[in-house]
Image 1 (tube, rainbow, N blue to C red):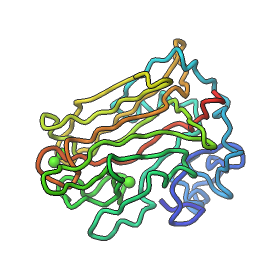
Image 2: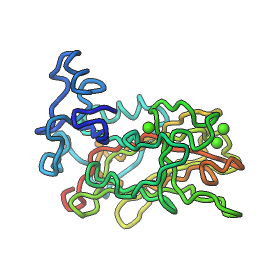
Image 3: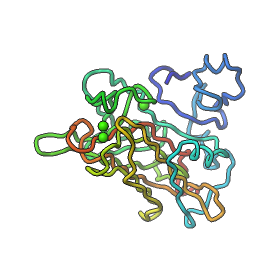
Image 4: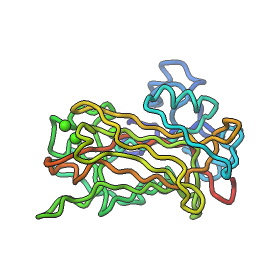
Length: 273
Ligand SMILES: [Ca+2]
Ligand SMILES: [Ca+2]
Ligand SMILES: [Ca+2]
């Protein structure tokens, strides 16, 4: 994604404070600033810590102790549930140069300063365009890159298929009110169901979804929104554990599944909730 901060900048989606609101531009100006659509990207100096305070868009946050998690399998429903918020953050991995033949390892902290998220695979984390399986992973909607946890398969070891997602603000654990990820080619759930579990304070499980599937090469959206008893989204989700299939994404024996765009509402430090 081309942004006003340069081709290599990871996309940061927010429109608060100093972050320029793209809705104030005409269509031509939107194109010139790299905004993918109205209200979707930071320009200028970007969003610094001071800009991204705890009160996301002024919306009220739920009581984390009184939380239910709703699961969405359609992005429209997820977006609608978050319509009052103006601080959706997106990691699409397209800032990584992964145009070579081999998957590119990224640090778990790659998006920590910019997006306040840590992505930790069983053994490293990888980005590539198709992980060597173009029939399954070629031509993703969020092109060109996909994500998958390592380690890569080696010998009898089938490699990694689990990723832990945690959030951090100013070195402190943080929570999010919503989280989503796209599963690519989750087409053999009988060989290894994909799934997400989200947890809150004290490791308490807040919500879970697994066993969903689509056709060969499909892009299956799963989103979760944490709300209180009055239906208000709140930053109760401290961690998401994602299982993608049953083996290293490029092994091509049982269930290979890649991941694409992670989105979440702006993380809020636990002490600021
Ligand atoms: Ca992508
Ligand atoms: Ca397939
Ligand atoms: Ca598959």
